[in-house]
Image (cartoon, rainbow, N blue to C red; front, side, top):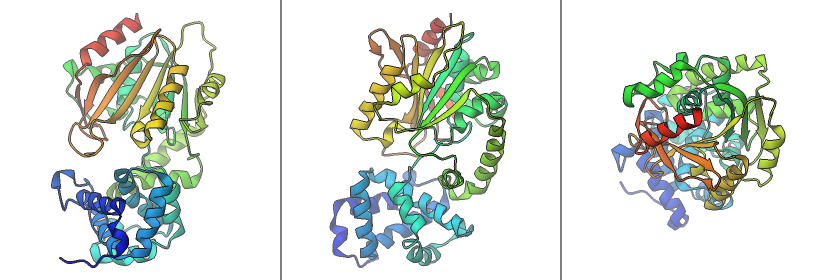
Length: 374
């Protein structure tokens, strides 16, 4: 099919964005296609729309230049911004749109302030209850008889930490994933429910506690999962009205050099026993520039003491989001000399963590956790 394009499309960033959208649509590599069929149709139509609309292409060039955002992240942001804007218009049947309907919708959507503002300002990943916190819960449970303080960097609505506090974590997760580690060690740790949370402090750049922030978090879900995610989040947030004083959220850029001081000031040290600190980051570092990543590592180094832990959930290959077992839980141990090397503790089959198995350094991590628990 020959498509008329405009001169602006010769810019490398726009050409690469179109290629990424076509990849996510399953047109160039079926293995790299987005799991949500509705988003595949959106991505395919958006790729053609960018090719054929010079004004929108020029706008994207400005946004990409201003935000310094990676193209694969921006490609993921486009359907989320669309879902957010359409829901604000009370349009909820877009998961079934065909290409013609999306083309018609995009012609008005690209003039929608909610859509454009999201492309300029919104983050492109969020955390929801339980999904990506199994490793954190298991690690905390392994540190038996030890008060735990967690700093969760990039916490979104802080529902990950609140899930550890408000309900039996194991009962909420036992049927949602298959544990392929030796003797189902992760499920065993979750079932013991040994962790003693002294304090949970979440940090996020944006204040998502307001209604629009919650709407954005839900909009980051797959098209087909929107209603189910909304119901789960609203139910979870109703529990937060209990106001557990162990839970705190700070609105702050995690690359800010003042963060260690703010966290130390917010820390509750009222305990007769040694409080062990875990810094947790779920799907955060890949969103940062190299300078931003170095700044966060420096902040983590300042916050942790010898015997504390940094736990990160991340992609193994950032260019291939949806490849099976492309997610790893990596542990760094703080020593008197600084942070240790990365220890690959667990592998996860997807961003939802339906299956876990041992990483390359599983045995080493389990041994070190046993030593810290003594």
